[in-house]
Image (cartoon, rainbow, N blue to C red; front, top):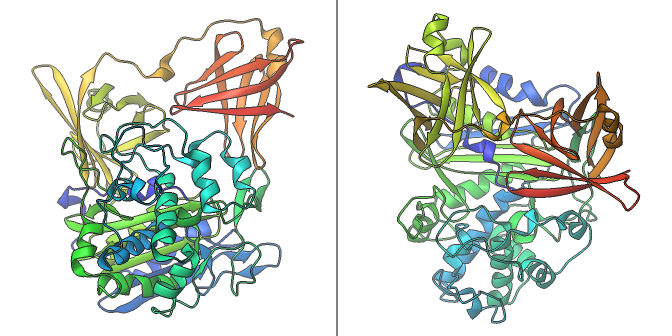
Length: 550
């Protein structure tokens, strides 16, 4: 149900890197197939994809498996949980009700939920729609996994998060928020007199003849349902079973690529809402200070080499999805997968760029530069958005690492310009009067970084501790039913391995407290009254997640 952040894979703005002939003599279908089968082919969980251009379907195929246990291959007709793409439907439903005069996006939420604690703040439907409300997102709360196992009414979901402190005042910041769309679904029910599921069926699915789309259910017999999977150390396992009542209006819809095309056509042709209402959904919202957030109502705002893009991704247990729409060219690409831990947004973006005739180059466009030229840009840079990125030189290559993220190689295309392998992100370095700066471009987002003496948290100095106590930390710490952290020792060093991920060494900063160097993260081990380690708390990205020792 998360907004698939990998969807915002970045497209280079340097025109010289793009071929003027999108296919370059190659078959476009073959390029699509190559992108799709890289991660989803063979006997792995699969993918379905559709490309719509010039008023017709130009590509529609599936790869991989819909059911690993029964050895059933994926096909385009397979029904998949679309996760947060559901938010588009919720946003359109709200705009439909506004056109009927039953609400306004400027209405305060207390008009519909009088007892909701707003802490003296003015929170409107507008704030819910564009993730600027400041309300706590319930999917980020520590007890969410346990909560999500059971069936819940909309009122019970609202009660789960409504008394949490607000993250910020309404309109002051943008923070992707599933709670806002839970509230919107609840308001749709109150205003329409129908359940959210019935509203979708009566006002969207049935009129558009979306016969393969549903409000999700784990118990209902759904023809062509693709089983959902998660990666584990042995390959694959069935996704964590969860009630479909918890994603609700933020992520509960199931559909297939054919029905999603019907949805796209309805949006493009203003079938359900007027052009004026659609313009509201596609408008780039601003914070109170006027800063754009690159999100409208249920759609993210972006671009591909000058072509405006309206897009969204979805991620829910066992499924990840991505849909991209170029309104001016009326090009639509939808990619649905039956596995989590993957990034179909990257594939969908590449396919959309190709369909638009605006493909991008990756590492193959790199040129060779002497080591001295590469080393010239090594250092730490602080950016306008207060993000710290480190540029390092190793074994004749240059790398970039955003604090808290993985280290990635960057490839030179000139003495000053570098790209990431996906070709969508670029650095352009400059030096003036001995001061180095860098321009970071990630499609619609552009930030300037300046050289700084600030160091990332991953450059902490480790301390020495008695290696005899390392054995105290060895074991499996369960964070969720399908996700654990396994601690092991080797050569008097302590290592961490999370489910489905590679192993990393951790370093002591105090007894019972360790940090990672690959990302900005910390482990704090906890002991019982007998001094035995019984749990660990992972601190990362402002989150504190507890794991219990088995």
